[in-house]
Image (cartoon, rainbow, N blue to C red; front, top):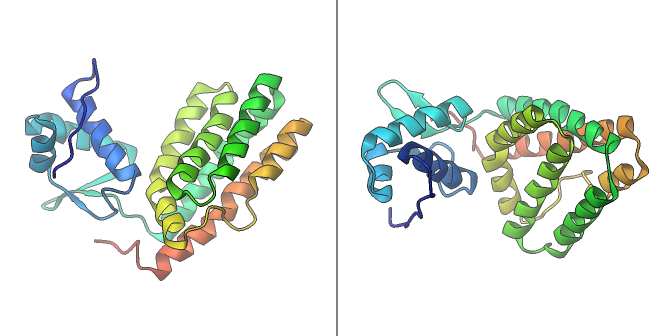
Length: 225
């Protein structure tokens, strides 16, 4: 590894190692199924192996890393059915967040959503920027729900499928899942109907589930290592 990692002020070596590996997984630099060698990661970061091992255990609890007897740590590889299940969990959680967001929408929050949607539309053709904005768009609903624990659970569920969604988008080089228009979500949010907002968000999430799961099955991306 030749990357230079900038340490985070105030973070312990374990936290820095965890943030580094998590970032590499979520950005696709560490692909699914890749073996994670603690000694190499430690050398890259300039740490001993112990905080790296502890960080991998933490990432294992988050579902991003799998630790197997006699095989060490690998980036978690999910089956199509497991990915579908995670999307179903996301649909329920993000639907609930959208309900509370809509019930408590303000002009200031609405302006933020309008800005995010406009930026996403302008980023068509720039996969990485669109992808980052898309994550911010969904995170904005969770944040605006005012439910911190719900926000955390949603973030963990999204992280688990993020490498696969990224792979889907990069392979097909397009930004939208079928029937998942973000403009529809914004229109419902503006009209202030929480029940319809919850239903629409669930549909929005599930619209992506089959597409990603089927893509991964077809490309053998979820075969167990």
